[in-house]
Image (cartoon, rainbow, N blue to C red):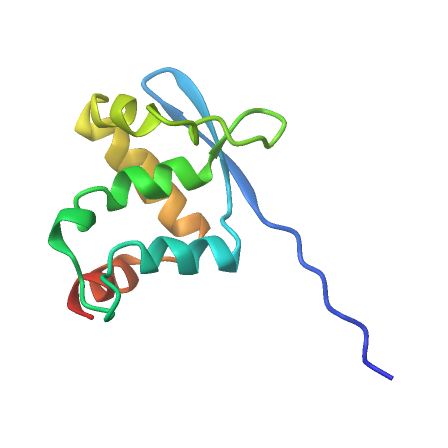
Length: 113
């Protein structure tokens, strides 16, 4: 007989950015693995052109509406996010990275693999 599977709830947080409320949901392990793999080629080597969108990708993964539904995952949203001020994307990305347990070392390791 198999043991009971442990269950965990993903964390949420809310931040204020330039007078707007931004809701964030912690990414799942599967989402983080896909996020990291999306910056590498088939042989596991980093692809610089894909690294450009690392910040945008994490924002899309973690920003949610008040009820926890993803709101930036539709085609075209990445282009919209790229038009936001860099100070805004940096602040949202930093909060998302902390929420997901990613620090600068984790994200730098994507570039060095």
